[in-house]
Image: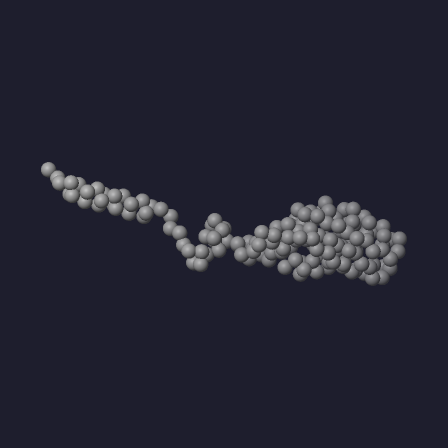
Length: 158
């Protein structure tokens, strides 16, 4: 026969045993000051704000989301020419492009216009680091100015 005191003691020990088992199975929590970026963000490391893209595991460079513009120059048979480039970036990919033509003569106007009409089909949806345009809609020289402007935009977006 067990006494009431002995029953209380057994129940107390059993309760502590169950609590210890449950605690051992529960996930541990760290204080915010000791958490790594991966644990602070649900397992995914991120050190940038939501409006900018993050680096990939392979160490590729990243660019801030937004709209950037620059002018690029190139040489045509008529001399130095300029083309304006505006790119919208989202997660390192081009989501929109706008070309501003700066023709110095009718031929430049024709070729820059053709380039402006065909460039979106070649670059929208592509990673900015993969862009290297050579000929668009019959216009090959304007590409040089476009590529120069893209390099300047990359610098702005870092």
